Length: 129
Image (cartoon, rainbow, N blue to C red):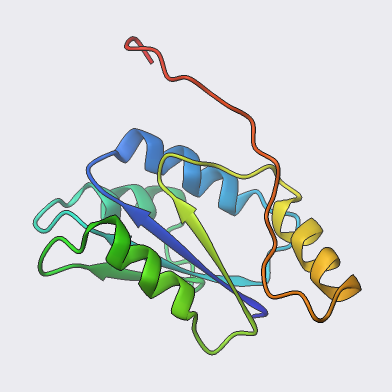
């Protein structure tokens, strides 16, 4: 795959479900995802992944032995992998269906670019969800 998605989560299974649904809905489906559970001992991320993407070979699950924290997770993601591109998806974010396709098109048009940044919508989560 041309892109490795680093999805980091910490004790937010409802938000993780939304992030995973957005990833699975991508029009560009040739990716691999490293799902990083940063809450040792919390089984919820694996449960959510298994429910939404059972036996999907694009997912690699990482259960952290200790809490890495945001900085270490981000640094890990930005070191990338063997794929030409890497992307970071945090559990409290989600992507429009054409996010990866549009990003890869932009990179193809500008081969000297090393980073794609996208506009965001601000969404305020209410206490009652």
